[in-house]
Length: 307
Image 1 (cartoon, rainbow, N blue to C red):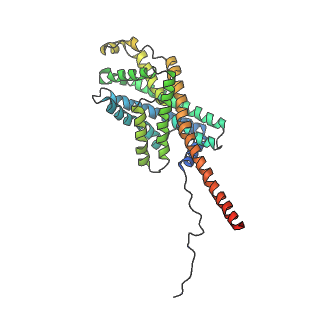
Image 2: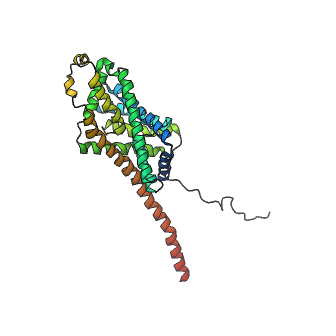
Image 3: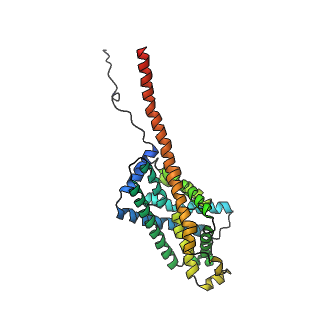
């Protein structure tokens, strides 16, 4: 039988290029900037509401818990992960993950103006979503749950957030968004929805249980505390044997200047710089080294041929 040497069917086909997570993140950032203002703003409102609902879940789960301090916070953190799960699965524009658009900016695919406009639009939408949930939760009278202990828990959480120093709030904001953006970064590795859900849960549970600071969550939590302080019946405080004056520092000015500003800046640094630009620098260095190797091999081959 006559044998013929036939080339493999794949011999002339280019090798499939593996797409890095940094490249996926670049597309993720471009997609956020490319959305229309109306779509982006609407999805941001949803995301703000989702994070607010997650905090409601956290308060409900942890109020009156008899478990150990760490386990109670861990369970609460898992409950809070509902917020990012809703954003990832249902769709939402969340400021703390939108800062990963720094990757597309570093690749010069996004201008400074587009980046700032997108961040500002999403931040404003998140704020409105959070404020809508403050209104709904307040009108629902949820602070009266568990004999009023639900509301007292909310007050204590809100007040605690105002007692950080500016530096502490900034660093806690960095740590928080490192975890949030690492969770989102891991979802870039899969298209399976259930896998995405599982991937984001532990990073969120970690930052919540450790007391890191999330600017969008705080947009709901602290105003909720202010609302309870301002509008709850004095008899409610008396029934809990708690002085209303204890929470007198729950003011809008204290919130904005002692928490929201430093935490927001920390979130930008943690997610946009540490995670986004950090991985971009590493990936960019690897690409430069890979492109340099063929050139070096070509020079070596040419030198040998001359000899």
